[in-house]
Structures are given as structure tokens and as C-alpha cells.
Length: 181
Image (tube, rainbow, N blue to C red; front, side, top):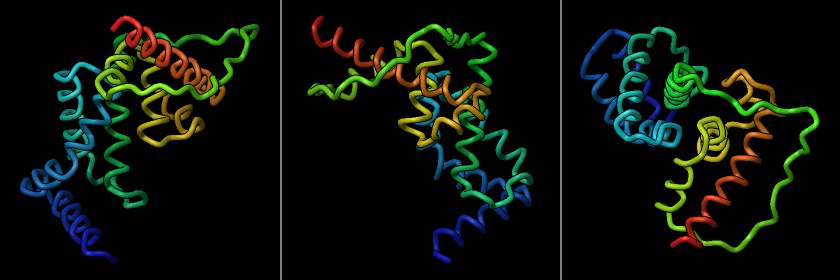
């Protein structure tokens, strides 16, 4: 067992005993990555920070439910993602519905565009919530469409369709920004 894993296991045990110094250490280790996960789903930085902190509180309150079946970081990320989804659901997130007669969106051929990180972030923040969440979970968080379907309570085909539409809309937003600039 690696030294990092041993240290993490020790911190988890301290958390389970309610030791606040372990909470601080875990927060210091994971808050940056969890903030970025939250920020990709919730563009407002203040709201993203608040939701991330709420997720940490839930994780600390539910630490007895951590079984070690996945890494602590993966378990925590799932809580963070669920916190964001809960917020979006409360905000009355309306998913783009799939019409059976609607043609399937095909992936565009790769085009030679170079965009700055700020342009991509801005373009992503302009996507509808549903598109942005699916795109973030798939591209940045590494979930596959079946996992996204389970997390969001949608079908795998809806996840794939939302992803393709989000990607197409993102490229269009970037082109619009490039031509306008």
C-alpha cells in the first residue's frame, strides 16, 4: 500500500472519529479539484463555492457511509456532482426533450479552431444547464453516458443526444465569439 493511500486512510479514520483537524486536512487536499468540478456545472463562482462547501458538509456528516469501495476523491466528487444536480433541479431545470421524429445529431468533423481557455469557459457558461451538465460530466469528470444517465435519471440515448447537441452549440458559440471579436 502506498504512503499516500495510508495517509488518506488515516485521515478517513480520523474523520470517522469526528476529529476536526482531519476535516481541515481533507478540505485542503480536495477543495481545489472539487471547486473546479462544481464550477464547470455552475458558472457563478460564488454559487459554485457555496455548493462545494455544502457538499463537503454533507460528506463530513455522512463519512460513516464511506466504505472504501472507490477512492475517497471519487466518493466526494459524486457528492459534489449530486449537490450541483440537486441545485439545478430545484432551479426547475428543464431538460431538452427528445422528440422521436427528431433527426439524430451527428458529430461534426473536426475543425481546426484554436480557442483560448477564457473563450471556452465563456461559451460553456452560455450553454443551457442541461447541456452544460452533460458536457461537463462527460468531458471533464470522465463519466460515460450510462453513468450520466443514472446520475441524472435520464436515458443513455438522452445523455448522448444532449452531449452531441451541447458540443455543437459550444462550437457555434465559439465561432460566434471568434467572428464577433
